[in-house]
Image (cartoon, rainbow, N blue to C red; front, top):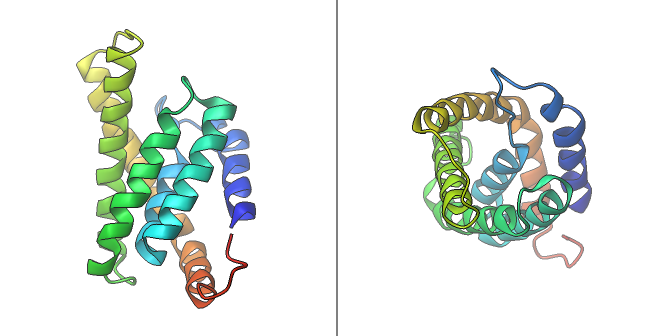
Length: 164
């Protein structure tokens, strides 16, 4: 699991940060945490959220702890919802990814504005939310097959102590 997170961080740093879509950079961490939380459950979602969050805060966070907290909460809540979703339903996964993107970005902006006194324009926030949502939908569609097979491996090995 840690290798998947490291590969995702590498993709984020070397590919996604260099390919902005209309000035917006995707966050593969949201896609990874949401997908694995829904496909594998709450414990995996929380573990991936915390691990990816800490690494992303260290490597490219604006303030330490924001990504960790938000990805932890995303893994927690998406993991709670995993029992009600069909694992094969790609539409539900995409809708949850869009919802998580909106919630994470709005909370990030609120934290940056309130705590760090950043100035943000409302239209910039809306544009970012729409474009990141579209970007994350494409990433979810691209990575779904691999994440689905990874989740099968994780779910088979949940009884094993070699999971993480």
